[in-house]
Amino acid sequence: MSTELHMITHYRASIIKVLLLTIIVSVCLTSCKQYAKFETTIHKENATKDGIYLNDYVVKISYDSILKLDNKKVIIKGRYTIVKGLNPKDTVKRQGRSSDTKHILNPKIKIIESK
Figure 1 (cartoon, rainbow, N blue to C red):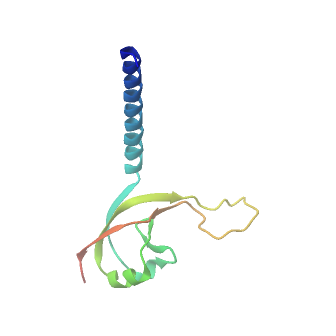
Figure 2: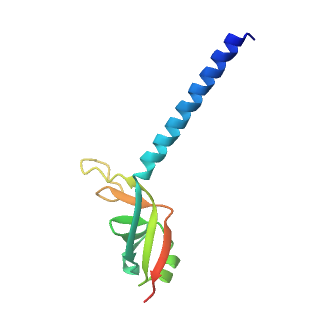
Figure 3: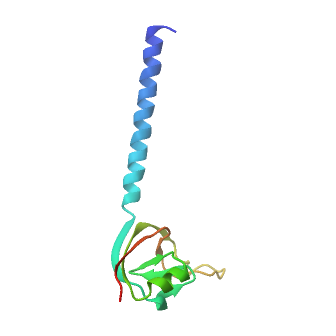
């Protein structure tokens, strides 16, 4: 392999590495925008089949965890996804929520006050 061909191959590999790194960084920055952190008190009355409603989010935690955290002040942190609501013009009836909802699927929960 000639020196010139080797340099071109090395140059192309470097460009590909930089492009991949740029893509990874942009994906990370985009996903960081969908990060929630808030303080709230858990009330088991807000439980749903999906977890619990807290501060405009559906937080996915088990019902057993909800019972253990009932009436405790906590900090909830985690990335969220947006689940699109049902289309009112849809002729097929489906189960779901009428509006878009934000779901925290893997929350980090820290107890800050027990009552």
